[in-house]
Image (cartoon, rainbow, N blue to C red; front, side, top):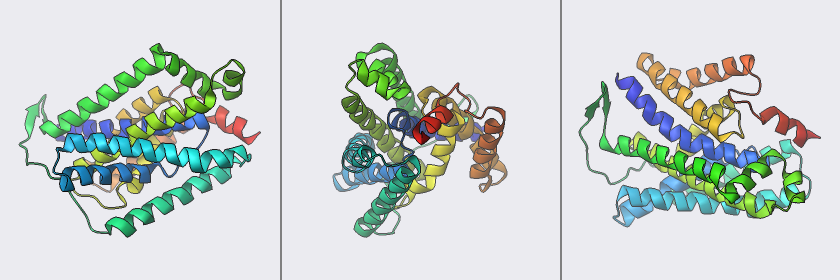
Length: 293
């Protein structure tokens, strides 16, 4: 089943992206529409290391993670946080993030141009695995996604900083009154989520074979769909949403490539009709209500 194999690869890329998106929303209540453009920053950082620096694509992916982490942290520190300190409303913050994304996208286009680019990688033969056709690079991307999610699970469940992140996401004011340094926790969460974002951007560009300045923004809607499907703000829900939407969209693409995003949003509409808070017992609507007060 080639479609299932492609679906698992797409799900791995979506997992990296949607979990990072959910983590950002969980700790700061910001529906960050610049997220896709940070993915593009990661993809181009990897391109510089891989093509200009003649390094391996995996070293390029590490550079993309660092670039995504740095870009996300800078955006939160120098743009979003000052607006939040002034009491900017939730809807206005969405507009701010949209403006940041537009600036990033046009800045990348001005520097890199509109032409498509590709990484320096050697052609690989497809491997037959449980009836699926996958390359070694695609298997590596899936392994990286699994490793990242395992590491995040360990951090969130078994470390002090992970407990602080969960406390901040649940109720920042209560966490602050209990002595949690919510400012530092939020900065760290944005750094971690930015690294996931950058890694996702590189994986996406690698899977597409060629990319340009719109690679991240064109994928953002599917990332958001996966995050909301699983209850945005819930990393574990985002993992489940990415798996369902990734596999379903690639299976639909066997019938027609144009159905990929259609299926993603049909599934999202269905789950929201059945469970308005998303697939996971989530905090999405609760956070929206709290932010609106």
